[in-house]
Image (cartoon, one colour):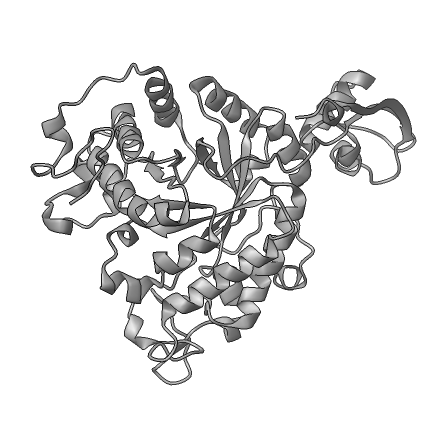
Length: 439
């Protein structure tokens, strides 16, 4: 970071007269872009303190002194190589839009982490920030955006030396499916719309209008100054009656994976003039390269990887079905599935010089005795599998267990687990420095 980037933008007292209908919160929201405060609530407290107000009650004609202090934004994004070892957590947009994000980030840094992934678009189709993209405005995607100051959020994270990743879900979009049914796959049962469980939540990945909407968001988010854009749900649906789904192309002529790959190639082109990295989340089973998964999901890694800077497999042990690869309960082997998933993916990724950075299960789903060791076992598995960093996922951004796991892993203070307990069968994996060969 340059010293010029940290220069103060200015400090001044502003005297204003309360108008009829004004509230402290409304005044704070109006002045927030000119303040170092992150939320309007914080600025309200500053105004009360400066004017010795005992409550939020103000009256028309009252004069208020407001101290406005601004800082020049840091140079954005902060360029890093794709093989930078990003060690971080996922944060929901409502949390990212509140001051709690900074307490959480301070905990992360203290534990040894350096990366935050936050939602700019979730799978409900809601945007984390207020967008000016026409379709987003038309469907109200950013109407209740919790991150009111996205550029300031990114700036404040950069000041903590945090690598900032914007997560953008793609083709699972419940809002777009509801507001624009013409973008939803059709059902073979007459003129009905296809859905997984009764309510349409997927849009057709092959439709140009759907892709252009996402590309417009990608361009807009890149301009905010994020260091990396991470695509999620860049795939076709995998649940429900898939034989009933009719897309705007013939899968016998144009395979699903070609649709997905072409879209990711367009995202790459949209970022060509920026320093923003591009990553993508993939199904954990995609690392095993089974033909049935390829046909269903549409993620063909040999074609996809050349357009990515980083690939993030979701290797959550709980998400592998019982009996997968002959293993009775995959959820009981957190080290093994991270290790083997990373090793398998490395075989493909290394040819394209794409680092593997897996998602780590930091939630208790199907784990009887979930504790920090369950998380650290995955971290060791990822490390031994050659991963370049990792990301912890908790759907509610609750990282009490996760933070302790990161601290233990970084300090090397976690309790060792006997190797025979890490593997479901006798391992054919060579973990020597020159080995790392998977069966």
